[in-house]
Amino acid sequence: MRYAMIMAGGAGTRLWPMSRQFRPKQLLPLFEGRSLLQIAIDRLGGLVDPGRRLICTAEAHRAVIRECLPAFSDEQILGEPQGRDTLNAVGLTAAVLARQDPDSIFAVLTADHLIEPLDEFARGLELGYRLVEDDPGRFMTFAVAPTYPATGYGYVQQGEPIAGVDGAYEVGRFVEKPDRQTAEQYLKSGAYGWNSGMFVFHAASFMERLERDVPESHAGLRRIADAWGTDRQQAVLNEVYPALPKTSVDYGVMEPASRDPACRIGMVPLNITWLDVGSWPSYGQTLEPDENGNASNAASLHLDSSNVLAVSDDPEHTIATVGCRDLVIVRTGDVTLVCPHDHAERVKELATRADPSLQ
Image (cartoon, rainbow, N blue to C red; front, side):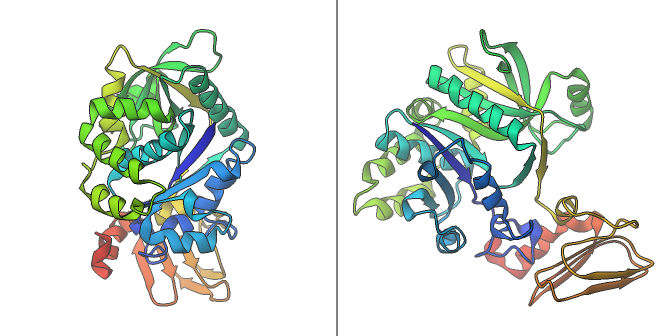
């Protein structure tokens, strides 16, 4: 049976002051009234039955997710009592699904990106599901065709074609964020793609691999799975999950698996635009600028200004500038942020000062 899990656990501090502790960036209706999480769910149309779609998120976000996405039941929301990185989010999903459905195959997807075209995404995901259905011991990942030598992404090396399958390849290796020179070499070679952080796994096979590579996480997640669906579920989750070793699925499982000749890891290259909306400048790329490069999601008025991003949570509130250059302005009901474009990464630092619980 096919399932999909969308990881939606990040705090999104670089989109402060709109993103807050109890309204993270994945739930901000910044895209014509839709949130990143809603867009990620909509991408699954025709691929995964609505009842087999899961969201893994912070338990503290459960209520607001139920409010924003009333079609999702409590059972479809896997609430983490504390964030323990992507390995344990994936492992929790695998442990629960393997207990409920021994034949379950699930996609791991993200709620951080805008992806186009949708038919290319759907083609790749369908192929990933099919390859794991044909070989439950195979892990599948997806590589995005790089458009510049990014040093902030991991990379996946494309190996030999998978026999008898058009558009899928063996994985050569996984590479963590490279330096600029190495990234330029990867781009020129054409043999590397950006690591999308999206996967397809057979749940029981993932648990077997987890037992080998991260036995402490495996043991804890098995304890949680054994209590799942009982009156002890929440108590065991609260006790065990925060003590799991914190690591990423790439570092904990995918990298060691790629070095194991007995493990079969495949990749599907995706020819898509893949925008990580993780900062205000990246959000600005989703808006149509005027002739001077000024962009806004609401009412704005600019006189002799250029390259100004103006964002407001109130469509009736006008942001006006005179003679401004290269600024980000974000207005909410209780905070107004103003910073130069090239200082936008420091918004995260400011957010944690305003709310230390975000650290």
